[in-house]
Picture 1 (tube, helix red, strand yellow):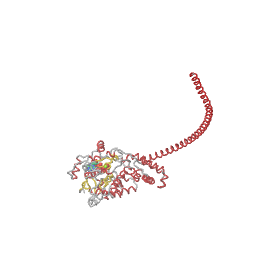
Picture 2 (picture 1 turned 180 degrees about the vertical axis):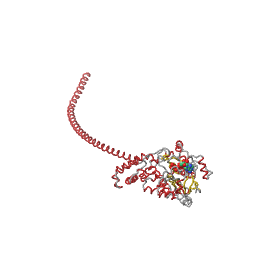
Picture 3 (picture 1 turned 30 degrees about the vertical axis):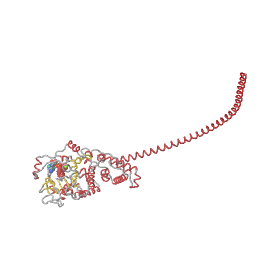
Picture 4 (picture 1 turned 45 degrees about the vertical axis):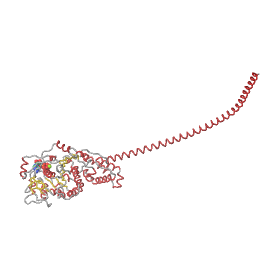
Length: 517
Ligand SMILES: Nc1ncnc2c1ncn2[C@@H]1O[C@H](COP(=O)(O)OP(=O)(O)OP(=O)(O)O)[C@@H](O)[C@H]1O
Ligand SMILES: [Mg+2]
């Protein structure tokens, strides 16, 4: 177990590394020193190799990467604190941005986000979120991947088409309700939801790294634009803690946490959330500690955090709070009363009078009980107060080893493409059927013509045969006739030959006898 010196009052205000998973609260009016306290805690964690996740709402956190420099104010603070061996230092930072503008794009898929958080983002009523639940069941069953808003939209439209069939299986699905979910998607798109819903989705392990010199990575989520869309902001952070919760194994009580999550502007998280979701947050806050994860809530008004959750936050730093109205007074009173009382200290009036960078502090002690609260001066951060310029921030993003993995979005085959392909296939099947029918008709027509042609040919053949037959008969008759006349002619010539021969012999004999004589 390591001790982190966060401040000093009558004694040292020490945060114990093995109690960080008991969570914490940093509260205080604007300008009272919350962000600096958060930095001091994050720096200590990083130095002992524990990665952190922090949202940067005001753009004053990324400079945790650059060592600070001495000035009179700091020197006097260090003197009051009695710290003589203070060393400035910078810490390894990874910048993330849900809108992909000033950091590595932080993405989550629709299916990872799940129907509950999605309903929250889309501000759906009970009936509509019921339909969203059915949509997730249907797409699971049909193997349709829901990655981005395009997928969600196609799947909803498909749901309208298949409404009757689905209603039989899952209960009534009104097209109107589906239409209103489709309309809610437009709002999310306006808020930039189309940018952060998709792939490559964040693997939480990438936020749980240490640098080569063993320091825990400080993951800063650029949130100045994100807080403009409070629902999106809250939902995204909720998804992150539930993702961390689901991804990590049970480890019991560790010497030091595996990861610490700082929830800045925590009131946004609880503004108008459903009781189901509040229960879910409470459950995660309770159970995530045995996974070695600590959560710090940072807020201007500690009463914005529901009691059940607030009572789970063991380590408390309360900076100055103001009491302009009776309601404020009551709030400060409640906060003062939740501390383990210090007989030497009028906590209530002290809270109202704290100076910048001072706080009422109570951390969990070795035996797990909260320390008696004390008024403490908070340590200065080791990193600079000077804001980082955009070039330096760009440099961090460009040089990140995760740049290649997350910078480019990927659009792999999912519900949108699959449903489009299905529609195209159905169209093609119809076209093929049409073609097949046309071909069949054509064939039938050809067959008919063929038959006709055959019949005609047959007739021709018969006619030709008949003619041939007749011709043959005629020819035969002619031959007969010829033969007959030829026979007659044969006799004649025989007679002629005989005559001629006889004549010649006769003449020879005559001449011979004449010559002989
Ligand atoms: N521990 C400290 N050491 C040195 N200076 C401090 C310390 N705490 C606060 N300060 C000074 O007070 C200023 C305001 O503090 P900080 O930004 O932490 O206030 P905040 O409560 O986060 O305000 P906001 O609600 O507006 O974000 C700092 O910029 C710094 O100059
Ligand atoms: Mg601040």
